[in-house]
Image 1 (cartoon, one colour):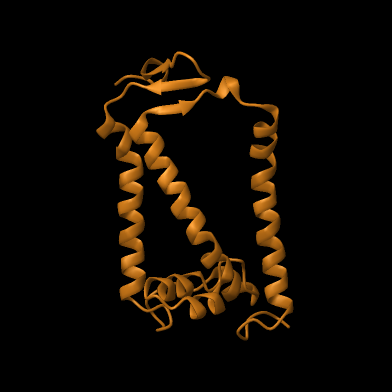
Image 2 (cartoon, rainbow, N blue to C red; image 1 turned 90 degrees about the vertical axis):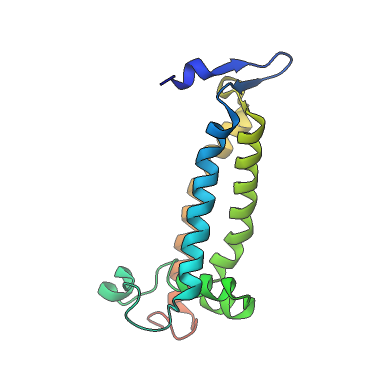
Length: 161
């Protein structure tokens, strides 16, 4: 099995590296992820999370009595899969907002795998490096703020408020 270092070559005329693995091999990861995601969504669409006994409860809700940022995510996914966007927004607005972002990221991953051209990490700008450090922290901050707000404001009868 060839290592990643032996399958990457510099593309002339730019800060890019070419992945020389066959296309089917480059696409294996993105395609497997998309197939698994569709299977999970199909299962959640078929088995209603509003009916007790099919899915385990949220540990935060069960043990602490408060809603986390993900509470209502299965119900929101179920409603989105059935085309009911207003109900999905009622269950968990973050899932509805994240769905298009996930689709765009998957499309970009497939495109990059199809083309076999990736950015050279040695050519990253300082701005991109800072963005890659700050973005995960900002995401965690948004999730924490959402968790606190949804527990202090009435949100479908959830929380401690």
